[in-house]
Image (cartoon, rainbow, N blue to C red):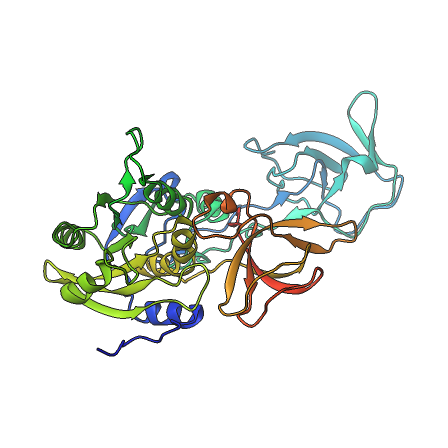
Length: 417
């Protein structure tokens, strides 16, 4: 029978496009307290009900005066009161009067500007104020709508909410928010050789680590695993697990059993229970990869068959599963940022497939960025992920790469704000 899929597999960008073409956002929403909305996706636009801060305010500690133009050195005022945040001066400010004012405090009625405190000198009795240094043209006043205008869009629909979004919404008095429901993800780990943590390992067996790896990675990206199963390489058991996960989840992910060996049942089962959209990636690590749909409980569920080797599973999850989860949740897809770096040491490799090599980011005294690739890049070597700052993008045609060569790299960092 002729193999229906390209021998070399799909290039990464083409595979990502094919996946995203087939992912439709889930429509369920949930209303949560604002504090519980970090990393959630907004379900609708949120507008400011009023201007913020809502009153003219001082943007520094100093003295509010009624002079419309910068006064000259030697001008004096009578100090008549104080305006502090939450405790404004309630009287009209008239010429020749000044009010002590603190940063963020409401500007008294009649005040035209604020003099920074370092420009003035108070009399020993604290009654009179004199300008002792030249005042600038700045009024040092924040307008009533200086932060947010009434009706302004604070957050659009489909935005993943970060620290700054939550702070902005809190500043506008938003206590609750309608957000998209998180996708329910089912994880299937297959392999006859897998031993549960805490149990004795027999000859030829390995402790099962992919569920730990993928669960932690997904949590780091803002997602969770709803159901996780470890199943031996037995077609009947795998068939039952796939159907159960598809019936109860929005998306199913497997790891292992997706290649073409005697015990690799995932792809034929996917073909039997749904559809194989494509198989194999033109990528190192990550060639054994399958994407398609499972049919269960009168619905079609996206399916991702990740490689069994842990590094390959993690990298394909980051490159292909993560974008799909973002789209499934209803947000714009954000990939890892890319930057150009220089290779710190010569890199020996065989040409053939594009590669995502794990590397550390270093800086020199002139601000140049260097990628340091250390140790084996084997897809089974989990330690190659420890401390990695970069996924170094190595084109397929490059073999031995000299030190100092410029390459693109993906930055393994998520935004703070």
